[in-house]
Every structure is written in structure tokens, then in C-alpha cells.
Image 1: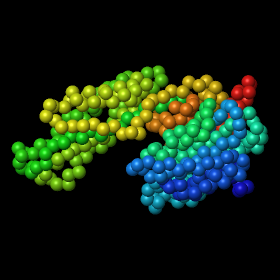
Image 2: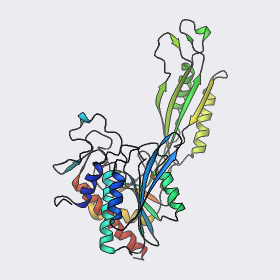
Image 3: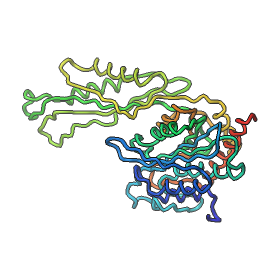
Length: 393
């Protein structure tokens, strides 16, 4: 261990040096297995498979016994770095310059995983393995990818092994500007779909012998784009639909294509369920289509419902830890995209809290060493307060 850096910083640096671009494990789970196993955690490595998706390695580590059972959840897979020549510091070097740690995954979310581990290990050193409960780390290698062979299946596996979770923190980078800004207590749902209109291919000079699918698709997507789904509420911002692609796959100027398709994504609040929203979309498209238009809509299977966590013990313990460590009172928010919390919420109350997310997925992704140590201190105090509360104060 470097005498110059805290355990959390060193853990983060070592994880960054593992090139674990989804779905490649890259040595990151090997490192965590050795680190946590050496401290007495029971560590399981579980690989899941599915059709049309890559195999993914995952890790589940647990220590202690009884209740409450608290779980940290996160991922060690990262998005590709892009052109490495654009980086000031090599994306998998883990360079530290001027109090800043550089590298892919520094904030999303190897830094958060390192803070989990450091806080848990320090808590165990102070309290021993019989601290009156159980702590687990649930780490996937599939969060940045299809999210098919990762957290959703690891949770199912853990339940089959007899684990029952009482609360969870997902360590995504939730803070927009400074550590302590925000705790995510819920998320809007996400629904993606593809609209396809089929026509008849032909020569552009002889449209009477063809059936151009593009005008029909434009009409359908315009109808979707015009919809105001709701005005939001005191829990969530308004639902919104974005058209994200419009494709015909036609490189020629003199050919009417046979098919045109468009893709969309909706982020929706708790005014809707997946079923009611799908019915709404199908109704809009049906109303906009002419009788002779051949069209279809298909929804992706990675859709997720909105959720809102109301567990006061979890939220209060984390909020108090944030305020005690940073002096800031965190906002309780539901904004932003989706995360693996959408799977965890089916098993136990879950919130999200991690590092400042300004550089996630960017060239020269980086994190301040002070924030790594600060987040570790927050998690460490949270563990003290959460398990103390479970003992009755």
C-alpha cells in the first residue's frame, strides 16, 4: 500500500488499471475477489449467459450473519475509452496528478466500488465480523452493456442462495457539482421501441410502381413527437419521448426503399406503468396511420418501471452521514437516467449515492482524491449509523 494515498484511492487506482470494457472482466473482479476474500468475505464468482448477448462475469461477496443485511451494489465494467490519443493520461494507467486520479471508470464507477470496499473493510476492522448483521457487495460486469447477464440475474441468484436484503446503496455518480449534492431516491422508468413501416421498393422516377414507406413513418413519428404525456408531479419531472434514430439504409438517390424504421425512448414518471404506456403508444400510432399503411412497433425487453424509495431508516442514515461529513444537506431527487437500482428495487429499498459525475463517459474521466476519501468517509459513517439503528439506537 502506498504511504501517500489512502486505501480507497489505491483500490480505485488498481481497478482503473484493469481494462474491463463491457463485457470483458479485465482483472477487476479478480482484484476484488482477492481483496475482499483476504478480509474474510465469502466471495462467489458467477457467470451468466443468454441468447444474443455476451457471457458476463459477476461477483457477490458477503460477511456477517443475521439481520439487517445491507448490500452495496455497483459495477466494474466501463464504456470504451474511444481514441486513446485524445486522452491526456492513458485511460487505464490510473495516473494521479495534482490531487486528481485519471482513468476510465474513475467516477463511473470503479471509484464508487473502491469506496464501498474501503468503508466496509474499515468497518470490519473496527467492529469484527460479528457486528450484528451482514454486509454484501453485489458487483456486476454488465451495467454499461445490455444489462441482461448482470445485476438482474445476480439478484435472482442471491435470492436462490438464501440472501434477503434489507437495504441497498448503488454507488452511481449522483452528485452534479459537489460531493453531497444529491441522493437519488427513485428513477423514472424507461421504455424503448422501434417503429417499422414497410413499402414496396422501386425506381424514384416511377413512384406509381412503388410504395414509399418514408412519408408514412414520418407521419407516425410526428404524432409521437407531438404528445404531451403529463406535466410531472411533486415526485418526478414530466415524462418525455425522444426520437433517437430514423433509418432507411438506402445509399442511392434513385431508389425508393422498401422499409423505413425509427427508434424512440421514453423516460416516464409514476403516472404510467409499462403496460399503460405501451397501450398509449400503440393507440397514438394506430390513430396516425392510414388504413393502407403497413406498420409495426416492437418494444425492447430492457424496459423498466419508475420507482420511488420511501424507507426512512435508509434515507435518514445516508442523509445524516452526508451532512455530517460534507456539511451539505443532500437533495432527494429522481432525475437523470436509469441504473441497476431498477432491478434492486424489486428486492429491497434502494437509493443511489456516489461521486461527482461531471466527467463520466468523457475523455480524461477523473475524480478528485479528496472526493474518493470523502465518499469513503460517508459510506463508513453510514454503516456505523445504519447498524447502530438496527440495534435500537
